[in-house]
Length: 180
Image (cartoon, rainbow, N blue to C red):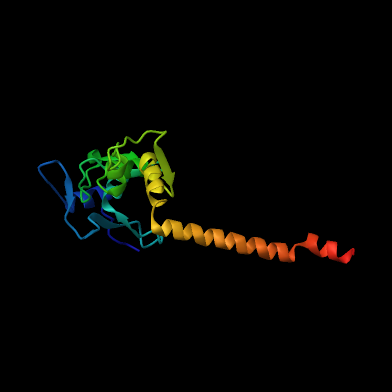
């Protein structure tokens, strides 16, 4: 079976990109979430699949991406396929280098009220960071509210009711009445 020889990935990437003023190899074919996509692999052996263009470019020019690492665009251009603009980093490092909410919050050194985030003043809950001084001030402020006092009264009533029920059905009381 004679077929045409497949075009090398590096050549296909060169044909599908345009170099801009920053040295980025900007992907000109369709993008998905800002990233170039291309077919890699062979139909003959069943390895054909979609791959991110910058990932294919890095693998063809530099080598495989180490396990547990991802590629970070140093140029911040998702459509860039230039291997010189890509660096392998951990997923955490990649997120913190970005401009998303996780990166913005990680760079904060003080809470909105001006208290510094220090190991002694920082509280964590479900992966979120809170200011200890503000949490304490909020708890103290809530104790003065009508809702807090109503909740406390409900808890006291429920505890009293539970104590009466336990006293009524207490096994010690049953044992004492049988022995008489």
